[in-house]
Length: 77
Image (cartoon, rainbow, N blue to C red; front, side, top):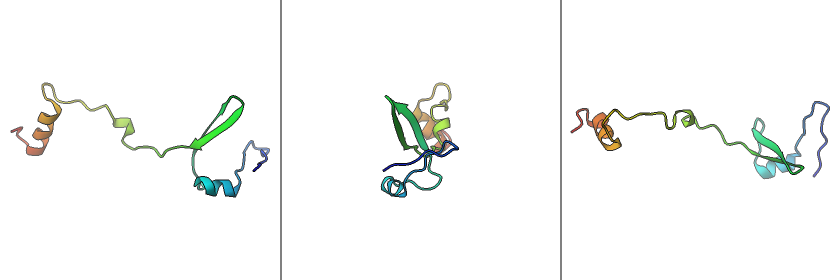
């Protein structure tokens, strides 16, 4: 398959290739060059929790089990 670069610097992908790869309008691709080759792959959808992962802190002196017991039961027992 071939494609021609437009004056705007866009590279249209053949419909058959899009269908083979499951690409849909609006799909985001990561693109870079590697040893003179153009390499692209589908970008994964953003995980809405990614920015919060690892930011939580347990209350001082509590381990995860104690904290879960506290928030589930309300009194920690």
